[in-house]
Image (cartoon, rainbow, N blue to C red; front, side):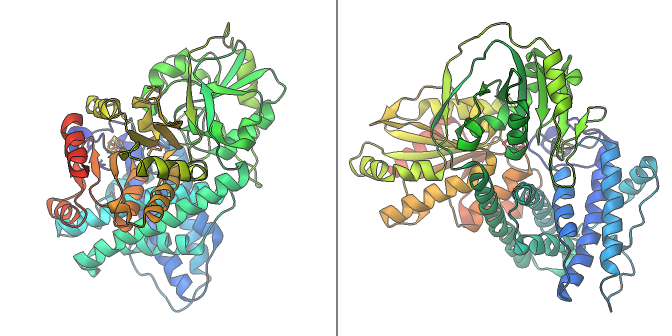
Length: 547
Ligand code: FSO
Ligand code: SF4
């Protein structure tokens, strides 16, 4: 196997004998074959679009299948076998609708083997690097594009679940996937254009997702979330999918079960249509990499709606359920019916059979709900505070958490930010500092939780609105972005920030293994992107420049 798509890749270069994430070589081969099959489907979809034919089933499937190959989503070989076969079926169905185009070879002609073992053997043949260019920089950009597309697919899928889709997103997904079949047909400059376009289209997908989430559940409002629990039966919900949480809250109403969030579900407490449920109580645990310890200690059932799932430890495997695109071999999976509805009865029955929490416990609370509408609702106050010198600088400390010790940088960085600065945060990296009391500036909390990684659109809206209010560009604001990446949604967001021309981003804890020295040079020369150093050095460099 060869996989280097995430930050925890082995030795900072590639996982070649099993994934650090827990991905087996078998699943890696199946993911490679699925990616290859999706390129073939995309090639046919592009030809069909040129003849005025598109198929929404193909569009939605492409996003779902790509999302399945994102880090920590699906580890189940059987599920990949189904996806690979469906990719070929949809491709052949679409081929039958077009005329005058023949596909003599390549991924559009792939005939999937009949069983998992056969598919694994094919995946080893059509492995991830099968279409690589001899030019290392073109290969680097093509891989960056594939990883960005996986992130884009995740956002587009989340949005589509909530009824928000745009044909421009589907068309780009297919056009870009097809472009990776013959990477040498494009110049280096064209490849750079394509990866930045991925960032542009990702912004559209994130906008659709924001509209989907807020349209269905209202605009988040500042909300205090308890970190303790109530006595009684319990269900823990992790991942990012608001619709799954909403359905579960409806189905658990009046059943004597309290529903808690885990990981990236924390910000959902701010949504009016979710927080209205009296049994939706608090937050349990921290970020994804700690689930091995946290899940066995939870005395109820656990539902994983999207990434990042890890191998169940202790008794977690007996009370853990997956839904959506998440999969782990042997774990029960709750599938949607044709209308997208899900029956969470098995999760509810499991929660009722488990002991639950023996007594109430107060462990303090954190604030969430500072998405763009909430922050811009107090924009006058914020602008006044900046003009009066009470707020000297904004930091966006955002991105993923992970297991590496170097991620303590983010805790230290936030702790050391001066008292006249405000920290905006989003995604699971916040668990490095989410429960720190940073105080407030004239009633404006110094730590503002904008939401999930899925809400990066909100942070962009806040930055753009502040820039407009001060009559400057985003790069001229007293705002510094200090980002942590782990998986491919973070790649897509980074491409969006680059598309928007954002400069001086600090990125850590390490730089991506798939970025070649020359591609890194392009990023440094054009965007002054830089690796994190120490919290002290970076704070001094930022505030020294800003003074
Ligand atoms: Fe985290 Fe995982 Fe939200 Fe990522 S839970 S690491 S960017 O997949 O999704 O922030
Ligand atoms: Fe390794 Fe990350 Fe790929 Fe998992 S997703 S196999 S940890 S590079």
